[in-house]
Length: 106
Image 1 (cartoon, rainbow, N blue to C red):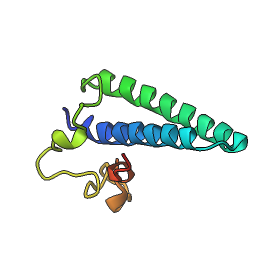
Image 2: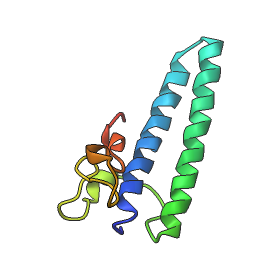
Image 3: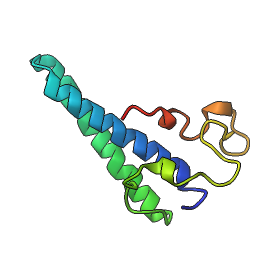
Image 4: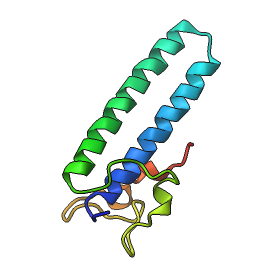
């Protein structure tokens, strides 16, 4: 995994987990309005997963999410999305690329 693709892979994994959670919520509700909202959100997540996957492939990264999850493939030494300051000159601080992606919801 390249230094450009590992933050994207964390973010893609978070999108996959989000889609999984949305599917579980869809199976648990009988509210038609909530089902419509959840389905729209699930479609957005699927589109994001596809776009991220295409970008990762374009940058030379792996084609899919590892079965054991991204955590099985450690970030480059000394790097983690929560600690990544982002691109030079950015003011994202600890909100660097993928910071929200490490929230494990699945």
